[in-house]
Length: 242
Length: 314
Picture 1: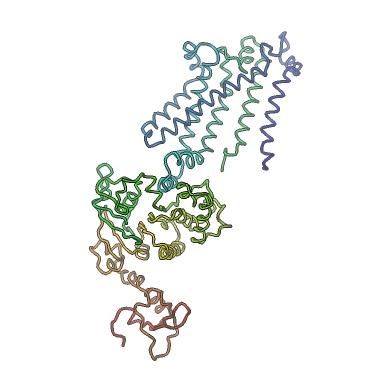
Picture 2: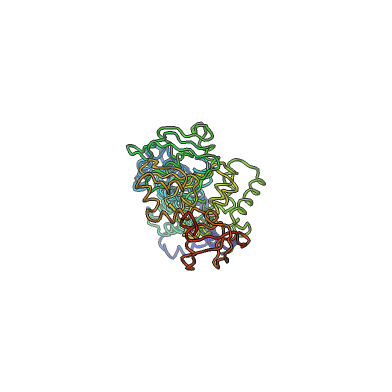
């Protein structure tokens, strides 16, 4: 695959996402056919561009926090001074994933109130495991001979981390981030139940009002967004095999 | 240059290295040899503080190694290991330039040094500089490993079974090259191996270790001739000792000046070992060999009786 052509597929999905976001109104005929009984068939309480923007914002903030926290914790747990915490860190991350995001929302709302904050917390916890697990696997998977040589040559701990460990673990770490972000794009939709307005709104609203057209519109955009982002990740130079 | 004084290393209750004392003189190639788990690698790794010793003192140039920062100490010593430990995401040239860059040499100087070392180890610049470690054969990777260890021109070189994973032919040619390099560079080398032939071939000073202790140390020939106990004797090959000794002695030591007799048909170089000479005799069914110099000119002769050490020749 040549340099220019590798981006064709992700850009294609991205274009489709934008077309769907801006041109949803044009598809009124299709949705009228799906949902013949309703007075209104295009979700109109907020425009789709705004919803998409908010959806992306929530997922991005949660992803940045999860990356900082997850990669940071995994690095700390693989240092000499942090080895004792290794089992604890991987267990905490597992618990974060087994705990359903809906339950996190239910617990977070009384403390953090309605809105965007509880969903960011839920996504952060839910997205932590793939990042922590992959960062640990990436760092632990480095050839012990390479690590011994790095130390034996007189590299400091920081130099080994920056010049050897992180570059070698990068593909695996990136795969974890990709999983985390992709599942969180889908999971973010439940934020609509606690008043975080995003692409989950049309879905929840459609379910509540029995309007299938709304549900389809929300699901279509979330699906396209997830595929676009996943496809972008797959084209990053570090992802996949070196 | 390197002095270990009553050094002990414990891992928990287990004693890995037990009260050893060892001096390596400047420019000497010291080989630590012994079976697996005898503490030879642990001893080596205590010198660059990859492992901290529990008791005793280790000195480099009469200074305690604990007086240095770990990184400073290690950058003064080359380190080569069996698995090479080359960084897989770096090119050969970048791998070799590692320590000079850590020492903040100017870029041009690093580049010049990398080129010099690649030439020294027979790695063609155009062919190898841009290659990645996974594109190299075992022998080439090990050469790069040795080049990297030599990069900052350290006085001391620590080598932990560097040729252990190579096929016998590559191993022997690298051993010969190491000897050759050493005769030019005069580094102080501590070399760990479990292969007695390798140890005998390389060592100026041979140290036999067993169960964390030094059983015997000295010049290879001295150990061959007078092993301290049964263990050293068996490690030295028991019945094969005669051949091992012959492998250490050059033909020139036993040859006689050319006599009035006709030259023998079979020839042997004067730098070849007695073992090689014996092999030629066995193979060619010859009792006498003509010894030739580097230009293939006869300089002496060697008879079977002389070779096996009978004093008077006929």
